[in-house]
Length: 99
Image (cartoon, rainbow, N blue to C red; front, side):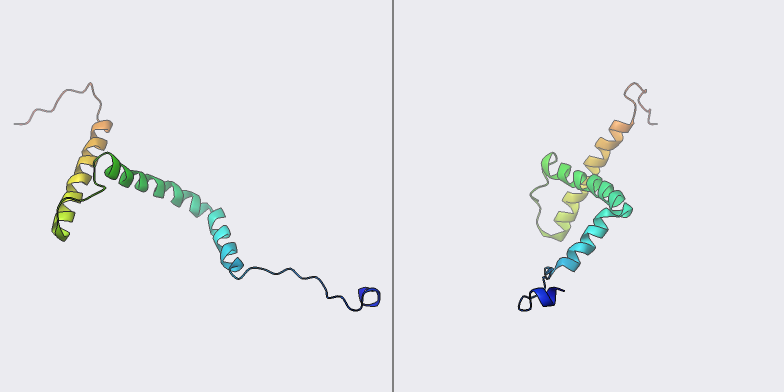
């Protein structure tokens, strides 16, 4: 019927962008249940690294070389783990006796 009514006009078409398939895949991945779990876990890890940088001053390394970086990062991670351990221990518990 349209051909009879409007013989010289083109049919309408909807063009999708070049990367729309990739965007659809990303939307599907973001809507999955796995992504919600992964986002929560990633948030915890990223907060630990942010804490290393802001609170413990690891935004800039002071020691040179790969071994220096490894040592400095190990010390900062140990300090962070000790802080976390101190929060888990009750404050009114008696101190441990060594020896």
